[in-house]
Every structure is written in C-alpha cells, then in structure tokens.
Image 1: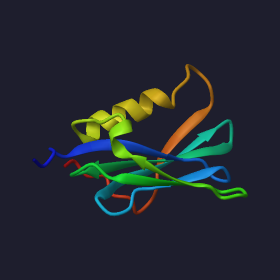
Image 2: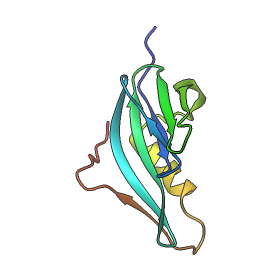
Image 3: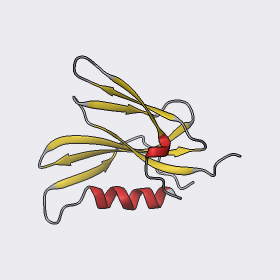
Length: 110
C-alpha cells in the first residue's frame, strides 16, 4: 500500500554533517539558518511519497556514513505545516536569528 505524500525537515550542519535525501524525496525548499551572524544549519523541506533511507555523512574524519530510515523523522501533512514547525524550531524570543529561503529555491505549495 502506497503512503500518502508527507513532508519532512532535513538538517545539515556545515562542517559537521550533511543530510542527503536521495531517490524518493523531492526537495521543496532550502533555508539557511544564521544565529548571531554564524551560519549554524541548512534546513530543507522535502516531500516523500514513500519511506526512504536518508544518507547522513559526517564532514570530519572518519567521515562516518549513516543510512537513517525516514520513518524516524517527524512527518507533516503539508509544506505549510513543515514551514510553521521550522519557524518554531529556529526562533528564540528576541535572540538574533534568521531563516532565509535560498535564492532559486522553490517555494511551492503541494
């Protein structure tokens, strides 16, 4: 039985690890997260039409590669629901943080 499309938030931390969606996921939007002038993370909202394995690769030796089943990620029913959660996760009162949609990234409702 095919699963209904769902949306997930993928996280990469430059210099620490990167998450790649691979086959079976469609990246809808990608955001850069900056906290007090320092780029801390890259978040992508991806649409899944089935359960997949994400590839999480450490960016420092020994460059460990993990294959993480998407069933362990929080799922959202829409792009808007994923955006709201991402905004909630990246705002801390009056602290200086920005979440910026990358230029050229699609901002589509599916």
